[in-house]
Image 1 (cartoon, helix red, strand yellow):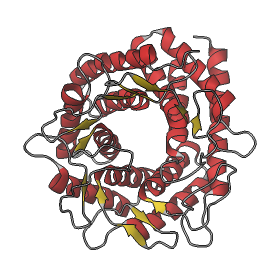
Image 2: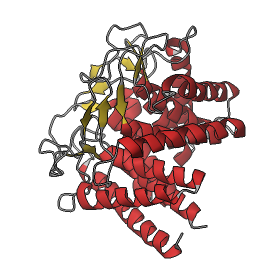
Image 3: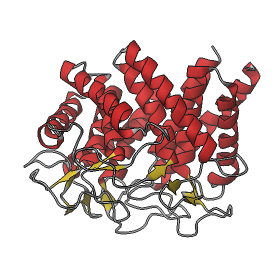
Image 4: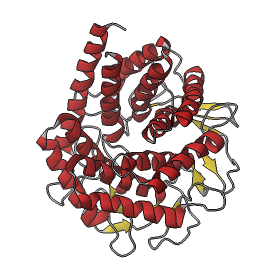
Length: 403
């Protein structure tokens, strides 16, 4: 691999990482009501009185904590501290434990449900803040959320985790993250982000029970969630792991591939890591075979296996995760085709996703190559986590390749 090529990619990578972070530094702080604004429109303008979601705020906390560890810039530390204070003051449930799903622009709770997906992002953010600051309180909050998840959500009969609960941890009939999701008691998405968050916490809390749960989650992915023939994730499940729908999410496939490998490495299980490398390589290969846009530049959104219909939109977060998944596959296999595809995806991001006029990234590129008119630069689900993390991870992977 040419060192000059890697060095140029690193320069581009770090420049764009700084640009993303600066966009969120300048555009996201809510100086009137505290914390961070709930929405940023397509032109980078804050949307007044927008609801503030758990996912957005947890991901902002993670991003500035991780950015501080990566760059050592105290500006990012200050924003991480701001995010942490708001998160604990307004999202933490002092009565029942865990974190609320949403608050209004003034910080009043608008949804007190305990979505396990959201609890996982609480762990991810709080453990990263601990890594950045050494704040023991944030570590303790992380551990408390793990205890709550294991107490109320873990399915002792079938394994895995149930999706959602009331504020006081009673069962719900509606498990959905959003109205567009299918309503089933288990999902790939929640399990993926529990794995991600437990792994990040394990970096700083070498707890045997946590390691056991991470190991169990990896086996669930290998034996239950990854389809044995198609090598795609199954997305939704009944309690007994039966699969009611045949849907494919190419972005989650390639994101999950590297997160599963990361988890196996973190728990230092070489035998398990050997298994995950083989399975996740097949996942990445399936994405490249079926999920590439016709010109080979980018990854499309999803497919309905039952109808055979494709959604050929290119979503920002899918391209971000593809970069990491492709470089991870390249390092694990040595196959240069993965590196070449990474370069094409990065070129597509530079050419079509980055908004050089107003800053930030466009959230969706339509099948015909146009930018979605109704897109946001920030919102309940549009956060700085996927793209900033991807650029940090690819920077580290490129450095490893260049050694």
